[in-house]
Image 1: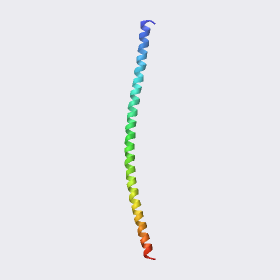
Image 2 (image 1 turned 30 degrees about the vertical axis):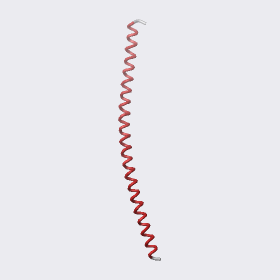
Image 3 (image 1 turned 90 degrees about the vertical axis):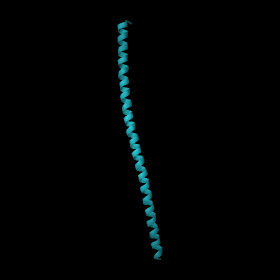
Image 4 (image 1 turned 180 degrees about the vertical axis):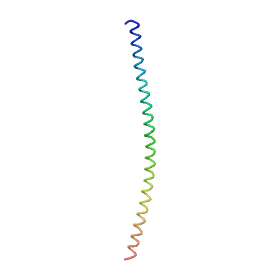
Length: 78
């Protein structure tokens, strides 16, 4: 293979590899951003879950108290 042809082939391969590297860098950046967004969403959902569990516990306590008062009223009228 003549030197000019070999050099041209090498240049083409380098350009191909350079383009592939740029594509990989873009993919990494996109994945980093997606990962950051997913972590933020997970944090938000975890906070919402804690809040909902607390509210659920408060409602359960209030319902149990109402049931207790209703039972007391029921026994008071017997």
